[in-house]
Image 1 (cartoon, rainbow, N blue to C red):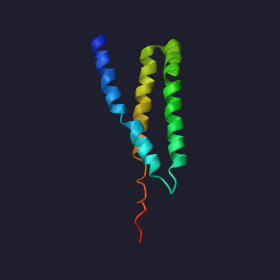
Image 2 (image 1 turned 90 degrees about the horizontal axis):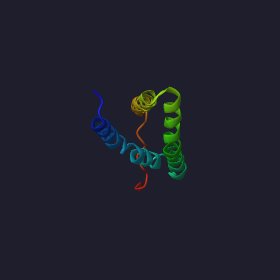
Image 3 (image 1 turned 30 degrees about the vertical axis):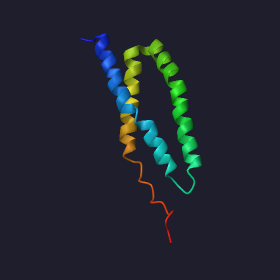
Length: 99
């Protein structure tokens, strides 16, 4: 049986789990290549674009298909991100201290 308290708890747990993704992505982009600026700018742009476009997109999907389906799509996309995260390669060690 669905309850408002259960829904709030579910959103809180999901928010806690996803709260680390953006900082980790920023750190990983900053370690890539000799200059971190292009990667950091790209990750920031994608992240903030999703932050701005995500809620209206979920609202439009909820109007068209229902809230359950719209939020299920969010869960599926989170699973896709988790699966693809395994394909991210480790950054090369920094060469700052080469003598």
